[in-house]
Amino acid sequence: MAGSLAAQNRTSAKPGVPLVRAVARALTLLRAFTSNRPRLTLTELAQIANLDKGTTRRLLHTLAVSGFIRFDEATQHYMLDAGVFEMASAVQIGRDLREIASPILAEVTAQTSAAAFLWVPHDGAALCLDRVRAPMLQIDAAWFAVGALAPLNCGAGPRIVLAHVSDEEREQGLSRELPQRTPFSETSVIKLRKAVEAIRRRGWELAKDVFSLGSPRSAFRFSTVTAVSWRP
Image (cartoon, rainbow, N blue to C red; front, side):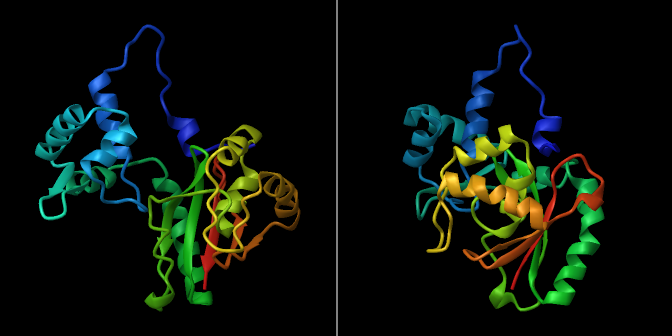
């Protein structure tokens, strides 16, 4: 069974080599920001990182001086700064896959007038690796930005990923919170497990919760699971 890009490339901790606690804490703060919560208060960040406010404030100040965090004095919220964006442009993982998939996404959008997305598994969720916007921006799926993580129960692309990852990765995803974004969102772990075989058998998935259609793309010849979805 194909695996995720993260599982194939992540370095494991070496026995006897201690981790630097301050670095780990700073990374926890950076990872606290997501597409669903791009702005956070000091209290929220301290709670997420399980740190006291003093330590959190010092770490955030260091990150801000380095250009990775910005503080909005008016709203008292922290947010990621341009330094993170600059680093993202240098990420190599998945670049070859994006280059291969890009013309396919463009063709899907041209033929359907829908936003097209490229999905891969990542830490028990589906990572949006690339997308092509719909020509009519008022029907674009703005909540699926490149780099966004989607739970494996919502949307056709993530559910395609759910059906084709390893059993271990699938159970990791199903153990996470399964949000009910719409009345049609499936949150039952038992029903989602049953849906896996049906998705594999027919080779595509139609998701009613965000009304999207998805299909696995084994033709990319990559060892990771890949899925293309589109949303009218």
